Length: 263
Image 1 (cartoon, helix red, strand yellow):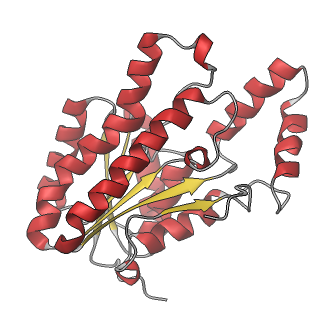
Image 2: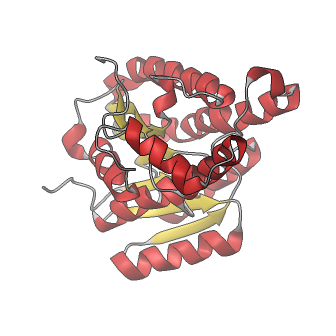
């Protein structure tokens, strides 16, 4: 299936590793030109070189912290200067720290809000004028299964990703007539560095090994395994494609059946 991405320019945030990198790689394989970013210059530059070597795609790597508004502005301006436009935006950011309500400070709430909610809002605000001018655009937010079924001990993620979902659903209606779609993609337990860190932390609290804790997760998943980043990226590529032109305002999980709700 030709997804119609060969002439498109995509900005994938927080893409030096994990799900962000997997999505960037998938879009590059489909022929899109890329802007990727991460907080560390050396890491994001290395990632860009590897993706370009593997796919032949044009890749611009920039160091940026998406929780800082000035960095977002510089990122988008640099991308437009290099490629002339941004057709596709994939918002992403590292997950906020785990913890229950009693353990979290006001500062942690403020930091997590900038990282998880404001980063996506700032990125959308920066790219939407150009998308509206061209009457074509795709915005895809990487959120979490926590917005449909809260995860224990993830108070910040459960709360703020739900807020992002409300923002995206409302924005989808506001820009639909401009040829712009806005969707959310919800990763379940996927084999990434972030999930490995969570497993180690939760296992330590329970006095078991990380491997044993991951086996407990696997028993909760009908497919009885963790997901792989490339499985997640396949849906992401479709949702930002020409083929998905009538899909907007949705939140679709990639979780091996973990969420038990009907919708």
